[in-house]
Length: 205
Image (tube, rainbow, N blue to C red; front, side, top):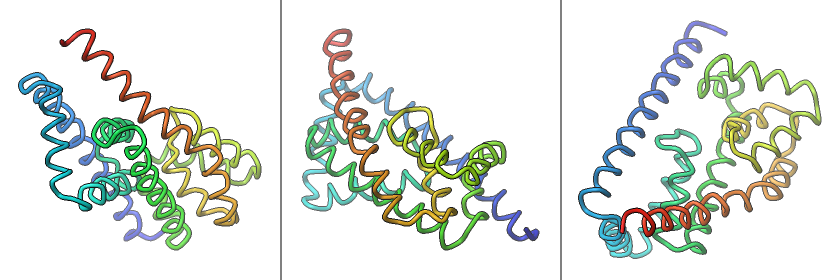
């Protein structure tokens, strides 16, 4: 790897750290807004703003979800919950699924086109080596990726990139994704929305 590639990896990792910091700041101010304005009032304002945009509202949300997969600004689980709260559990899930799936496909295809330099620029070197070592172990990587899609605690977006570095076909990748990811997205989104509504009704009102 030449110095130009090394510099790009270092720069991109710094950009992601800045995005993560911006996400924390945004989440902090969101909590302040909920406290000052009120949960229901803030939710109604968001719904009014998005619905007033017509078809552009869902498109904007889908685009945000897709971008979140490649460049995570705030934790993905939060946007899943917000989508369910604003659009309802069905349409919120549909829009989130389209966005997250589009982003996952993009990660796979970009890594396949640009190779290891691209993939390693999105995580720490320790995380990269930990999961990259699994690529030579055949089915174990597929099992890990399936578990990442189904369970919390895995860097599943990054594993989509790693899948693009393997000989795995796009069809195989999508088969694993469509088996293990959809139910998880729904549980995170709808389940998180129900939990927030319960907490607000129980402790805030």
